[in-house]
Structure formats: C-alpha cells, structure tokens
Length: 442
Image 1 (spheres, rainbow, N blue to C red):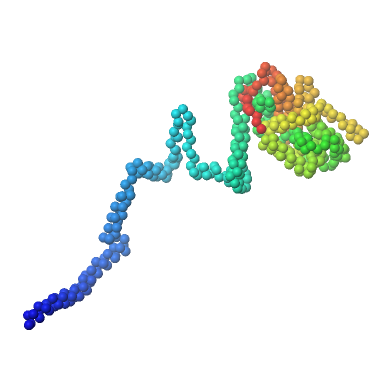
Image 2: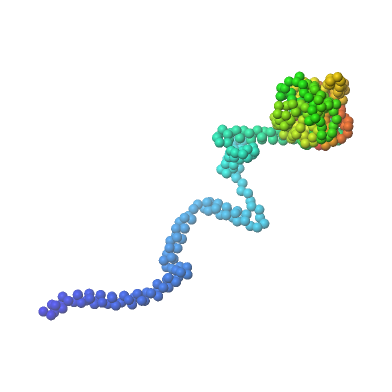
C-alpha cells in the first residue's frame, strides 16, 4: 500500500520541490543582475554605446552603405562641387564662376543659345520689373499689359541703340575739317534728308540756349491754331525783370498775333514772345507745359523750358536737340518766311517802327537761309541755328556758346566754305572732338 502511494506522490513532491527552489533562487538572481542593469544605465546616461545601441548603429551603417552605392560619376560630381565651394570659401581666393558648357552648334547653322535659368527668366518676364524700368508705379493687370510693357521697353532699347549708333559712326574717307578753328564750344552740322552728321563738336552738351527758345515758342503758337489776326496787348507782365532788357513795345501796345510772332522770330522781341505765351489758353504755365510736351514729342530728351523768351538761363538744350527743333520748325512755310525776312515795319499807334533781322546772313547773297534764329545772354554766349542750302543740299547748322560777337557768324562761314569747296559734300573725317559720318536720329 505505501509503495503504491509513494509512487503516486513522487511527481507531486518533485514539482513542489522545483517550485520551492525557483522561488528561493529568483531574488538572488535579481539581486545579482541589478549591478549589471545599473552599469548599462550609467553608460546610456554618459552617451557610451551599449550593446543595443551598437546593434542599432551597425544596422544604420549597413543601411548607409546601401544608400551610398551610387554611380561613381555622381559621387565624383558631388565631390567636385564640394571642392569648388570649399575653394571659394578659402581666404584670399576669388570665388570661381561656374560656366555652362557651350551649346551645340548645328552643322552649317548658328549656335543654339541655352535657355535662361528659371530665376533669370522670372526677372525678365516679371511685369513689375518692367514697370520699374519704365518708371511706373504698378504692374499691368493682364497679359496684354505685360506685352505693352515689353513693347515699351523695346522702344526704349531702340532709342538707346539709335543714340549709340549716332555716337559711333562708320569711318569716312573725306576732307578733314579742323574743329579747333571753330569758336563755338558746341556745334553740329547735319543733312536732315540723309540724316548724316557732317560735323559735331560737343553736340550732346546741355547748355543755356537764350533766344533760340523762341523757335519752340513760335512752333507751339502756330500749331495751337490760334487766329493770327487776333489783336494782343503788351502789358507790364511782359516787361523783362530778369535781365532788364529794353523794348520799343510799351505796355498798352496792340499788335496782331501774327505781327508779334514775326517780331519774336525775326528780331528776337522778348515782350512779343512773352505776350504770345500769356495769351495762350491757360496762360503762361499752360504754355510752358505745352513747350516741354512738344520737346518730348520731338525726341528732345535733353531740353527743358521754363519761360517763352529765353531770358532765363534755365532754358537748356543740346545741339542735337536743337537740330531736331530746327527740322520740325522748318516744315512750316510761315515760320520759314517770318524768321528769314531781312526787315519789317509795324504800325504802333501813329508811329511806324522798323525792325531788322538779328542774323546778318539773311542779307548776304552768298547764303540761301531757309530758317534761322539767333540768341544771346551772358550765360549762353552767342548762339545761332539755321537751315540753309549749301552746295545744293539743305543742311542744319547749330552753334552754341560762342564767345565773340561775330564768332558764330565766322563759324558758319567756315562751314559754308568747307562744304562748297568739296566737289561731293560728305561726312568729314574725325579730327579733334569731331564725330563725322554719324546717323542723326530723333
């Protein structure tokens, strides 16, 4: 009986003994593992690699190795770019500019230009950029506006190109003209029909123009369409208070607009010129605005007017601009006739006043003057502009800032003798500051 019972209880006793033994060993094992866990925690807090981190790092290195398996050419290109950046950052060395490879040239054709980078293309096509170049405050709101801005920029570029072309003439094998012989500090001789510049000396210099202003005054008056037979009165407002110049037209004198226009052009009558501007719709301020607006239309970019007589030294222009004005004024037969009449009589009350042309060349049989105007104030020197027929061609002559009383006439005579002595009047060679053979463009 007992042997059989012991055989049944033996497995139970063994299981109990094992369970008792495990319960006794567990605290001891946990106590023994505590130092190891504490050590691992210290390593982790100090940033030292633990076995787990070493495994993760190893995995990452393996993944990186897989990612770095790129073509050798790509790796070399990346290294080259890094080397260039590092070289540019070195002190004492200039950053090298990377240049694109030349575009392929088609056989027998021109080189194909590479497309602009997106940033460059964006700047070139941005409407606001174009508006800024044109001096406008805002960008166009539509594609059509962008096209208009682009067209306007092209127009500005065309004008600049024309100006540059005028400054860099083609070479010409023609008789020389000694510009040192000219007494005027600025001079220009052009053929308006062919747009050839025969002679130029400081033609771009902006100077006071004195009574040459009256050419623009007469042009604005005539193109305004005001009646030439309308009677105008001289008032105290027309008296010169800036230079103190005299006049035979006393306040209260009445003359027709045509008579005042005649006296202003032929004998440079200042009170007549001021009265013409004062009787313009809107008065003198509106008249001066019309003068400057007309200058803009004619392409006279260096010209500015502040009053209609030329007594102010703030009326300024260049020889080039004045040639444009002479060409425009000469298109009106009436202005040609009034400016070149040798003398004229006007009835003022019971008196008759006789006026003579300020340019003696209109009475010289050697000259065929089509249109002319003289000018003088101390700031501007002696000035003269003309369109005259010389050696069978109409030429525009501009002389500014001449010191002597007769030096502007002497300069005109020198040019006439040179033109007429040439069997074939053509552009001059370069001498001194001359710029011959240029194209004259508005």
